Length: 97
Image 1 (tube, rainbow, N blue to C red):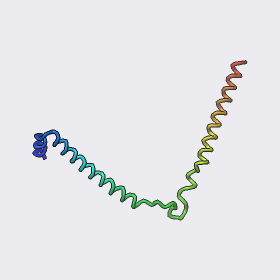
Image 2 (cartoon, one colour; image 1 turned 120 degrees about the vertical axis):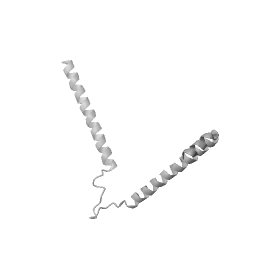
Image 3 (tube, rainbow, N blue to C red; image 1 turned 30 degrees about the vertical axis):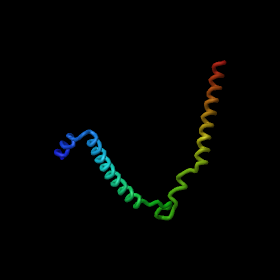
Image 4 (cartoon, helix red, strand yellow; image 1 turned 180 degrees about the horizontal axis):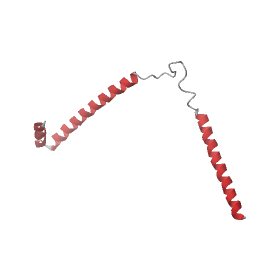
């Protein structure tokens, strides 16, 4: 390995860059292949069914609908606005008296 590096140091810069690029591409491809193999094995063993072992639905009851979530959000915004205007009018009333 050290002899190869010494030979590489003696070569012109263009050839050294080409060698470094090829080595880095090779290492990247090896890492990508390992990653793809691991991901496919995990996906293959994952249960994507919408029902659990007893036949009950896994989702639906636990996840609120988008309409319900938006409605709750708007209610909270309304409460914040109502509370802030009530607070402001109370403060203004105290300041005037």
